[in-house]
Length: 468
Image (cartoon, rainbow, N blue to C red; front, side, top):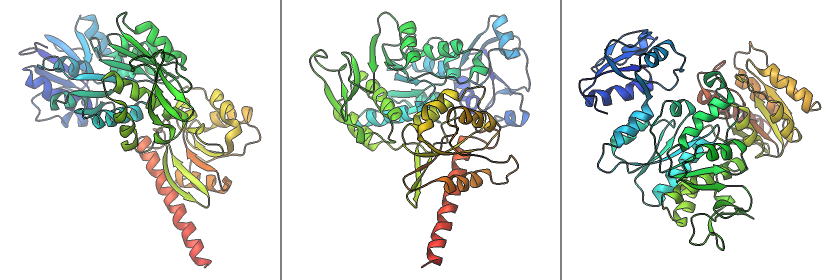
């Protein structure tokens, strides 16, 4: 971190670039920023950095490259930097090194995995704060970890993506968890093995390694990446073994952070305290509790934190109940694994799905939830792939594939789902796919679903009034 007078190149002028440049300038570095988007680059004017569009190799004398996490290792600029022996790090690694310069460095509690990260980090933040800890959720959750370090918080509940972890080389959390692993971002990493290896870096220097004892990849990565000196803590959705957290009847219990794990357990919360409901969110709550307990938070704070936690938008968000049919927005379910957790939380579903599958298979998902499906409404570029899977594994379930030219595709999808639904059903938006073929992001997709449900509710109210 001795950057005074050194030349540092920032690759990417997006959110990461805006966060990184002021920090590097404060450390005395001469900063150059490059990006292929000249308009985005100009947004950094006035920050004291030299702005150069489209660099394919670092400027002469560059001592360090700080890259935005989305840049692939195969990008010509980053390949050239590596060939020249220039270290390439991400903003998370920069934040870690910056924090170590403080007299009292912050504690890092790191959460990664394919699905459930944002819910878990939110639950963890709530538990820590309920225990009187100066904690903040940051990282890939919308608040840059660099900004959290600079703000001086004592504990950071950090959500990290595989991209961010790939560019982190010395990160040493107090505790870490890989929640689960399923096919995602293979186009970026090149293989499932490389994707898993990036996630596993969360554990490489961790003091307490938490894993999902019922997820093969989570357990494997803990075994492969946990330091010999690390404490291992598991969690599961049934009776916990010694050293684990788990579920007994309707109670979340701790058999790890207690005086005598061999003979005793402590009650943490009840299943009713977990919101949104569903087995996947019970697992998230157990993971958050394990990290909070690793930091020394008491059982009272765990249950109070769960009860005070407010789920983030577009994650199993109940929008309305119309004519005995519930409408649930889980637009954040952007891959089959996430959609599976959401679908298994309900018994009878009209499923709205589709978008960009990014090469992921949906056959296993459809086969596992076929008995829950009342109907399926599909939209987006990969809807034929999902339709074919439904035909193979749930041939009796009606499927409505919307035409690509529909002007208001989500309104059409909600209307079609409503026509299929019966009292007691759930109309569930859990796309199992990314949104960028039709929407700017999953949030816009979820907002469109909410708006369509509200239009439907208005129409139902109008019909009721007309008949009165």
